[in-house]
Length: 97
Image (tube, rainbow, N blue to C red; front, side, top):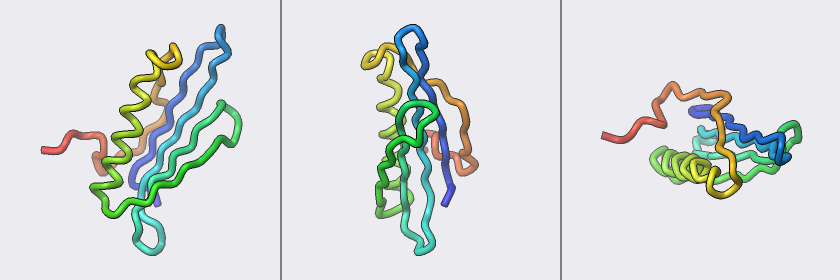
């Protein structure tokens, strides 16, 4: 399925914040576009939300929206997310021309 994968973590041991966030996008065996978002406390299986996208462009929009929300973490939870792993050979994070 993997066309795009990003793993992020937000940590603040003094406040007990240990959050993990993973987003994966790609096609399933039938050619449908899926975006899986997994989040929760670091070291736990976490919760998963699966988005079904009509096209690759829609899947890219979902990915960008999810990542934009993570950018607001310092205001919301008091600590920002750090990128731990990125697999983006197709250039999903590049701005459209």
